[in-house]
Amino acid sequence: LAAAIENKMLVACAQLGVPRSGTPDGAAAIAAEECEIFRAQCSTPAMFGGAAFGDTSHCDSSTPWSGATQDTLPPSRSDIEALLTSIFKKYQMSPEAVVVALVYLDRFSQHCGVPLAPDNWVSITLSAAISASKVWDEDPFDNPEFAKLSPVPYSVEDINAFETVFLQCLGYDVVVDAAAYARARLLLETLKRQGCMLAVPELSAERARILEDNSERRQSELMEYCEALGFRSLASRSELLA
Image 1 (cartoon, helix red, strand yellow):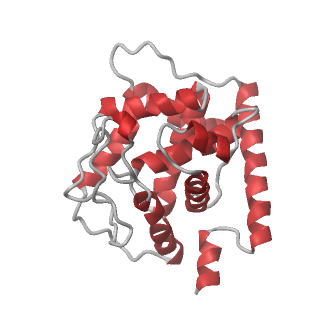
Image 2 (cartoon, rainbow, N blue to C red):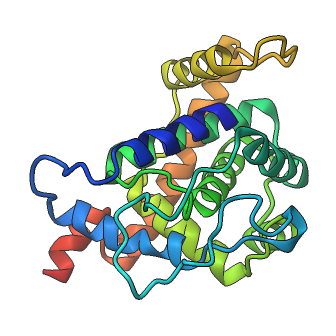
């Protein structure tokens, strides 16, 4: 997963200054604005050695954000691995949940067009891990517990806000079927360090069915909540704000 995240940031930095084609629609524009929260809240925890995960001293929600910037360099893969290992251990995430987290990270960028960058990857990755845990684990932590256990010093209000925006950017599409899991698993297997003995687990037909059922149940819960609030997705929310 560290390699996948590293690759995403390197691509974002390589595309710095390259204009995107087309004009973003209302949902995409709202997504970009909402995603400022990931950058606004970014911080470098002292427990990880100050600038270990990139110099985030420049983070300021009052300035426009366009992804990577020239004064932010991607963290090394070993730095990414250190934080991911801490997140997965503290959140007691299974290897299968890690695969689901990658599905969500890919879906996040595809849906809202906001790339992982040095100044937002920590909070976005944390959001993906929390969302994956709530889908895969039988008895997941709640957000106050996630905040308390987080290796990054975020408050429960931060965690709530991150999760809300992350799910909105997914369009509340949290369903993971066997094919989506298999694609993410293959990518992780491909990106593993040479000599790594850690196996990325395949799913039996039964466990794949459980994953799809759990994720469909989670999506139904989210949609019911959104309907109660009066909108179903970022697209419909853009209509409400128009």
